[in-house]
Structure formats: C-alpha cells, structure tokens
Image (tube, rainbow, N blue to C red; front, side):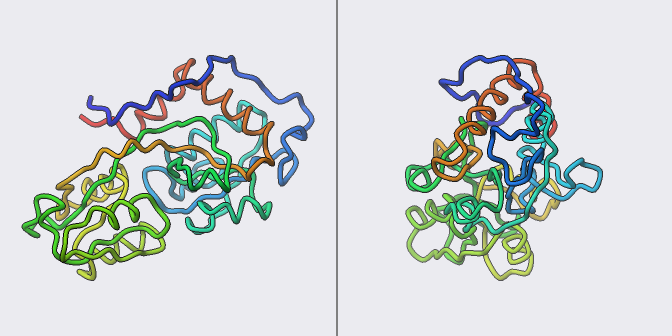
Length: 258
C-alpha cells in the first residue's frame, strides 16, 4: 500500500476521547442544539460528496472525520452546502449559518485573520491534470488556459508559477473545472492532488503530469474568536481519533492505493 504525504500534525496533545455532558452540546454554542452544523463546498471528492447512505447524507474524508467527532460528542451532524469563496473568507461562519467549515481548506495566514482553525488534519500538495494526449509533461509545457478553483491556494500557486503564455481561469468549484476540461474549454486543472487523482483514476483519458510540494495543511474552520469550546473539543477528538486508530481507518478508506 502506498500512502500520500504524511499527515501527522506537530503539537497535537495526546488526549483521551471526551463525550458531551448530556446537555445537547450547549457549552459549544451550536447553531442548533444537539447538532453539529457543517458548511462545505460539495462535491469535492474524496473529501466531500453526496452519499444517501451516510447519516448526514454526505461522505468523504472530511465528512467521515467530522461524523466520528460528532458521534463522540453525542451530537447529530448536518451539512449545509455553500460556495468555497464565502466559506474560506469566513462570511458564512461569521453569519452563524454553521458551526464549522470543512472543505479541504488550507490553513493560511491570510485566512487566519478571519477564521480560527483546528489543528491540522491533512497534508496536501498541488498537482496538474491534463488529457493523456496533450503532450504536456510538466507545468513548463503549459501554453494555454489552466483551470483553478476561485479563492483557493491552487489559484494562488497558478498565479505565481504558470509559465509565460499560460493563463489561469477561475471556476467556482471542482465540478465546473472537471466539466470544462472534458469539454476542452481549458487545457489543464491545477488543484489539490487527491481531487485530481480522483479524476485520473475514474477516467483513463486524463493523467497527473506534475505535482508540487507546497507544505499545505488542512484544518477545520470556525468563526473568529466565537467557538473556543467547540474548537478545543474538535482538537481533542482529532487527537483521540489518531490514538485509537479511527483516523487511520478513515484515511485508508480514501487514500491508500495498491
């Protein structure tokens, strides 16, 4: 089995799992008593996608982790689908639409001005997806339009690193990017490796030809300075899930390959 980039987050304290005290999670200041309301930009497989068989109606690495956390805190979990840009800017969290943001969101200094983040739960890298007959073997070969998701670190990377003659074009989400690439409206997609890998695995007409170490780590997002108790509880549960092996089980479900 081959695993992707390491995911151990430095500085996470080893804490035992702690359940809710039975008051419906009132100490967490939840939008809805007894329910963890999650905002996410769906679909973004393998991190979040619709699944009628899942308790919340959604599965994926992010969703499964949060479902385990909610279960351990004796909370139900519900998902609100939102755009990534208002999520990463903190708008939907500040408005009280949800308790937590989970959308494969990289922790950055810019975002930390408007958001609080959990301890990192995943290490990622950027990648370039192209049709197999494109003749492109690296980012240096790109001369056309590269699709990126608006408001993401992939967009920032493209703006800084695309060669002369290539230009980024922003789309709202992965679904629109994938459709645009299939239709020939863009020449490549530059975004998180696991998401591009999902497309390459699903359609042999596309391949990842380049990847880029960017030292990115994902975190769950919270309204700035408003969910301290919930943030602490989520961090405790992330540590507990690593200790009891649940984290590895969920990780292997989505990222282990032969």
